[in-house]
Image 1 (cartoon, rainbow, N blue to C red):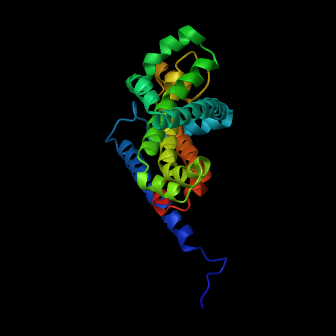
Image 2: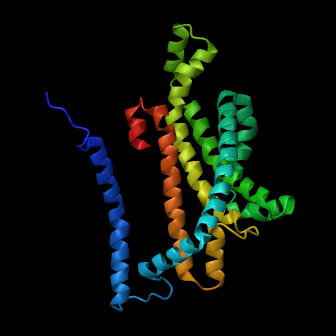
Image 3: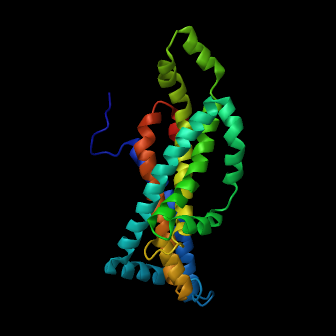
Length: 269
């Protein structure tokens, strides 16, 4: 029998490396193409600076410590907003899916509020809570709440009745049915809803940091727009993309063991 030595990369590790390289290929090609076009005079780098200028701005922000400060402020707000919004969304989704009368009572209102744009909440939250951290975290929590609520409620409502009947045939208690049947059935969709909520949390943090913020990646965007610094705007956008991707990867890593038993969920997450 042949064995794979520890020194040799395993097929799964090689596959992950290939996927990573393949995912990095489009932005690298786009960056090199834009840099070459600006150097050749085919494009103007005034409003959309070339990658070399963006990289120089990122380096300046990193060397001065400003980038770390702004990233830390944004991550703190997103983390708190995600925690509160996800918890509220899971509880509300579970209650609405299991209590029909409660669903008839509050689901129409929640679905209507879900269509309200994020910026529409800003003046109301400023009026209620001022311009400190509370309205910012609350606005992010609102953005996270709705996809988690819809995902959890839909996952519970779509559980096959036959699975519940099997639990009753085996005379499982209510707690055992929840633990052994309902929870495994709804976990994949719930984790997908959490990923969606995290993504919306990063979208809502920009609107949140319009409320009198003096630090954060959203502040960098506004500062760059006000003072005509497109390289700073692009640096903030790229940082948003990298930080958001890393946060999503961390969430997948932490929740992956919960659905390791299901191949389809593991592939999609």
